[in-house]
Amino acid sequence: MNKALVLLSGGQDSTTSLYWALVSKAFPKIEALIIDYGQRHQIEIEAAKKISTLAKVPYTVLSTKLLSKIGDSALIGDGDVSAKHRNGNLPASFVPGRNILFLTIAAMIAYKRGIHNIIIGVCQTDYSGYPDCRAETINFMQSTLSLGMDWEFEIFTPMMWLSKKEEVILGNSFPGCMEALAFSHTCYEGQFPPCGKCPACVLRAKGFKEAGIPDPLIERAKKDGHNL
Amino acid sequence: MNKALVLLSGGQDSTTSLYWALVSKAFPKIEALIIDYGQRHQIEIEAAKKISTLAKVPYTVLSTKLLSKIGDSALIGDGDVSAKHRNGNLPASFVPGRNILFLTIAAMIAYKRGIHNIIIGVCQTDYSGYPDCRAETINFMQSTLSLGMDWEFEIFTPMMWLSKKEEVILGNSFPGCMEALAFSHTCYEGQFPPCGKCPACVLRAKGFKEAGIPDPLIERAKKDGHNL
Image (cartoon, chains in turn green, orange):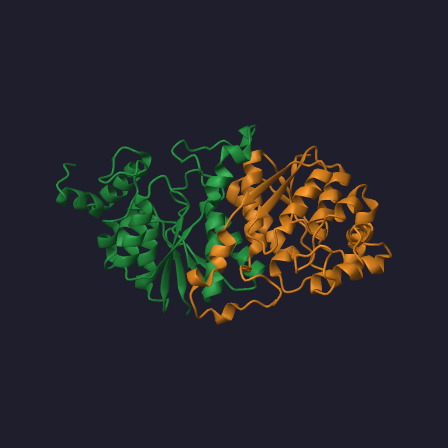
């Protein structure tokens, strides 16, 4: 078994995927790749770094302005009505195909480091207008990368078919995962404590509630004296 | 039929592909995408701009440091012996998977502009250790992008199965193509007039010689007073 590169965003899905990789013990070495693409909230990058440190996994932060350049209306020009964002909660710099880009970047780095396994927290169950989270897309991506780089890649998507409830129950079984999730970031508003009202907060809260497990992020906020 | 986006490097293959797109008249509108990824020689970017202008095709230059960051040994660290470059003529910033990255970027921009057709000058015939130039890779890439962005892409590779000789003969049949090829750039040394000795110059010269057509780039150099 070979080393693995985990795409770590600092969110719940990628954090749980990282612990899945750690617990499965299938990988002799695990590294995290954090892509700083000018997220609206820098708190996401800080979350990902903190989680890597908690997991004792070395990380690389790759900064790129590519997404904001592609998303920049000054570059793109007018008249792209056919390409309107379907999700109003996405930042202006969001561009469809983001996970394809991230997987390509991960594969290029993995190749250079002699890594065959890439782990990404995409999830088809909560599929909300992101076709690049679908299993079929990932399968084709794996073939494209393997053929195009003459290097056998395996893309692992341990969250693909889990509901948020199942994801919480799974994460709760992984030693250290809840401690890490206490520092994960989900809120679209970029707040700590989380706003509790945006779609991302609501979805996360629902998963923990259905699993009957308190969200360690909320517990941490309470411990910090926040009234939630 | 829909608009088309041509990945234009300023080299012979992409220039001939651009004129194929213009002559085929299948596309009501054609745009060029020039990716400035920190090429060793800025002459390539200038060549691509000049060719776009000659072809009366609007162009966008997208600058990204991503490739040099991925290729940077400071980022990558040591021990990547398995990933040694097979081609000693490639710049240090070269990273396998480059065309996958470029096609992903092109697709993201095409989506935003409502474009379904992407044209790229990759060529399997002269396949020299670049697995991302292969037809099979491009086919899987097309499926990946179409699925992952929920947008039907068609990737055209008009040079795929041509020898350099056939490419010259084809280009010679396209009005304006030879005038544009006079400003294309091929030489690995980044020189004008071309060095004539590097593998790229030798391959290009062979194609023109076998086709029995003088290379307009060399003709232009002679007209400029260079003794070749």
